[in-house]
Length: 125
Image (tube, rainbow, N blue to C red; front, side, top):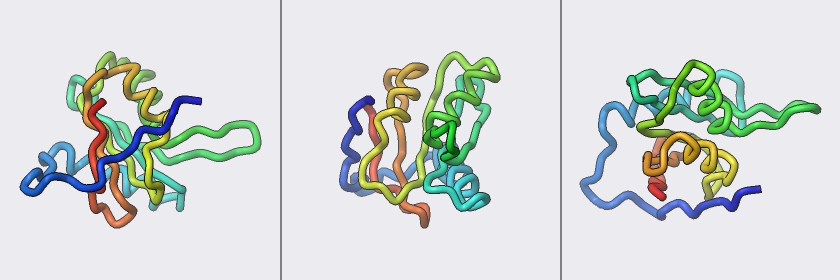
């Protein structure tokens, strides 16, 4: 299992998310809230299309929200991601989701937000 990257403790002052990245946080919150999932995620591909997903935990399948959002983008033909967001109560970004994003983007920011939408930090590596 990939290692969980640390999430920076706080965003630097004056570094608000762009409107497009803010939309990803809103979509991730909505995906999480609709089904009462542990986490929600959203990604934006090279064409500006967005994909949102919630974590899934079934007896035969467990997948993180970020993995599912990336898989949905890839299944729709995305070849590159511009950005991602995860809404979670965890203090770290899950390693499997991080690895999935890096499969399609070496440098796309991954914004990690609390359930209330407060951005806790951004992983860029």
